Image (cartoon, rainbow, N blue to C red; front, side):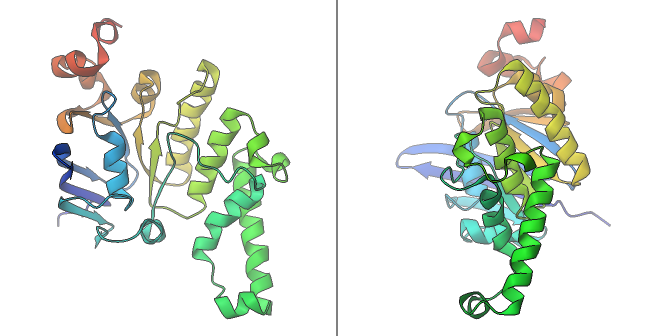
Length: 260
């Protein structure tokens, strides 16, 4: 019996005017995979993420999540199906507290209906208690519980990244998409991030796909890497294969990575 991929992406294509941004993009992710997507600026990586999460609708191709087609669904509907993401430029609700940022995501799966919320019925208070407790549990896991009442904007950059990942996990995803999580981090923060990504993958039994330009992070955490150039896949394989692939070196990595 052939097992079904958790995230099955087949032959995605999207055009913007006369520009074909992504063509023939195919990937299968099994439960627990930790995969990297790399390539030069403008290669189409974030465009792929935007198609996966409903921001863009592909002109061609199929996306199924746990056997369910998701093309045509809105971003919040795809999140409810089990796919969540972070962004290259951190998009926290910076005027809200740390804990409220996480509670917003937890409300996606709230069991309380509008009537119960408006009239503050008993179930509303039970749900509020459950959501607050879960938010604090996640903040504790990400070493942010002591900052729960602070405005999100007051956190250092590395902590804002951790909060954004905690908020994404609050939706209860099956697949987590990380868009350049190491962007703007210093070497120590990047090392901590590598440990965090590996821990999330194992602790939450979570499938992760990440875009990243920081090659130490990609090579250090990913089981397999796929490389885009001008919207086309030019290589895929284990990190050891990718860093020695002549096409990848020419298009993106450079000789210094091969020599290293």
